[in-house]
Length: 162
Image (tube, rainbow, N blue to C red):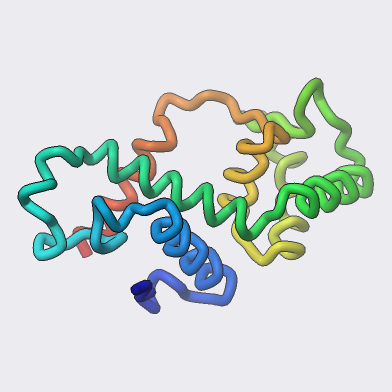
């Protein structure tokens, strides 16, 4: 059964992503390892918990996010929309990818000029756009000192403390 907390699903776009994310957990069989996306002490299977580490939970969250991004942003439609928008705003492909994202204002601007219209077309956030574009090789992002997994783990910890 999928239950979605209203606090996690404020707004139509967030609600759609949250539902797709939870469907991802279901489809990927994560219920074998976790009972809830937000984990409380009562949800932990103490016998099996010793085998499950925080990195495993972070990985399952990443998988569910990627599943949701792929579901909400079908490859063919995304590529067609991105190419149309890139042409319209004058952003040319760079090597193998359309976009390179780092700290430089010109690259941030190019990403935003493409990502923001895509958020309207597909009804998702820029973060979801970024996940999907990176997965398709259409966006290369500069390596950061804090990996994506650490960001997910920090966010999960903040949510659990509330």
